[in-house]
Length: 420
Image (tube, rainbow, N blue to C red; front, top):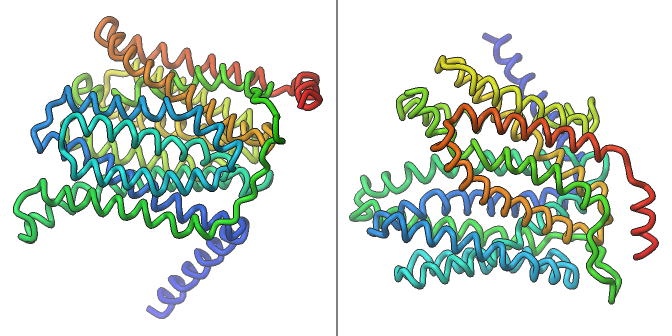
């Protein structure tokens, strides 16, 4: 018995030592930003999980819900360029504060004002406020890390986002039901409303660490024209092609498992949770692969792995094998993200990172939106197998293009620096 207690205490000491090593690898400001991102991811994960259910329970039909979702996306796209110019003039910290205050405030109005017209207008305004987060996220992480720990920093942030999404789904599924059973609210809708308002409060809590954040901003020189960095122009083709892969099959994965492989809905939910766990582990393990293989080679390995498992999913008709391939596919798909974002931030001067991040997110969002619509049409016309094999081909194409940008175009970059 005593030996068991000693073994457990040693395990605790080892875990504590590992945590201290991880914590001291990053500056205090990194962990301050991590705290803000934690509240943002958890709050919006909870809100986005429940809000459409809230609308349908209030008898909004799918057409109206779709229009509201489209309005949110449109607001995000429309505000990207103005937000980019503001980031270049003011720095990213003011935009982060604006997003953390304005977006949840508008979401509170969305919960309380239930007119269809108002919902569309408020969704558009919310999308505009939320666009500041993806524009500022990558430059903030890059500014708070260095070349040695930047990949790990991105991995921690992405893994936290995945983990908070899973946790938000669990909370959103149980808390309204618990409130209803406890008798504190007469209906499930009332419980959902309370949880949505609490989610907005969580996001607003992120303002507190942001106010303490010391963020180094290197703004462009006054009068400097907006130019796209040569590396960004070489980065965008493989990035956009990769977004065809990330925007295609993931949106239809659950449908494929249930309707094509005939897996029961309860098991599909378990597979979905397992896939998120695979994503979480893969993103945390990504820095190890990148440190051993290099950034670009690591990205290419993960993309080729993604292509392999997509082809295997399309080739097999055995549900158990398909589920195993599906979990491996999710792991490989998400393992790329820290490396891709790190690659761009490493090769772009600090004063141009907010612009590069905005262009990256805008091109990715537009590509994924178009890809999802086109994928649905292709599935109906050609079936899942053709779509899966096409996705595998696109993943290999993206890997080859990423290999092509590994060599620096030093002449182009030197010309750009001279022009600036």
